[in-house]
Length: 341
Image (cartoon, rainbow, N blue to C red; front, side):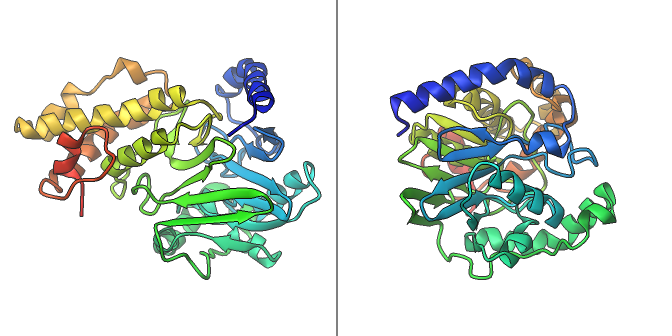
């Protein structure tokens, strides 16, 4: 776990940044500001991505990327949205440590989590991803590359080649130790994309959640997302009692904030949509009943995503009425009926 001194430093650092973060959250940030490393401990750092959508200002890095300095090299946590941004990530890491980036862990399959892989692979880094994550990357590679090129322009995306891990890990959990740091890569349930994982650093009390957790901004549910398993994955993370959570989107925070912005929201969706289905409510009736949830209005992009999230959660749960239960779920009476095989 984090030592007392380090924990105090984390808290003080968060207090100093809080007023600045409130200002930054109201505007898009250029890549130069995004790539200002934020320290969690002396070993663990992250880059705080923009809370806006992908733009030519943030160069597609509207997600968090982390790095861990070990005695045997740097482990990068996600690789950014392009070869260009990957190179700039490498330069930003070099401002903190002279250690090279030797490993890249992919937490998920969305473009900004892995399209920088090829650059780091060309520099000799080992790519680490679970098999289910790499498979989803391959499925979405062309679509994501085309969409990012349309949004950011060909110049920004020049040289970017999709490269999933060449030797993905055929397991739902992979533990390893490197240079005095223990890493636990865990698939606890699909989330924003199939194959999303959590990265637990048990000796430091830190979890990098990828898209299992959003703070400050509203999470998004796509047609391929899995809100029920995402809730189960969140509950698994809670069981570890982490001291610091680095979400996929939003500032590094504590468990209470993650619970408020993601756990409570997913819980509400799954529970209330489940009740609607049990009571034979139509899609339109459920969306109307849940159209406004004041407890979550503070989240950026609430108006863009919330009603759509209700709609897609209903469609997902309706299509999976007779599936099997998920272990560790916070509401087994609901989840047992609506979890997929």
